[in-house]
Image (cartoon, rainbow, N blue to C red; front, side, top):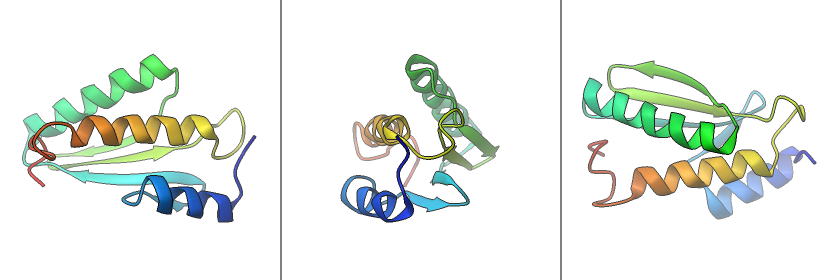
Length: 103
């Protein structure tokens, strides 16, 4: 089951306030303090995504990572997208409130 725009907005507001919905994707950009932190974040996201068998689009630069989540096989946003986004948020926010990212 895919979510419509209204349900996506409500769920983001309630559960993932730092995420947005645009152009068919759940989106979040993480600012990092340097390349090492960026690569640590990318590798952590990659591990979670592979474990969930759900593969986001990533845009990687020196000091940021942009994530885009969508269930391509379902043609929209599903529970799988929200679940992976929540796991990523929990991992990134774990221990010292984003110490790795330098936020």
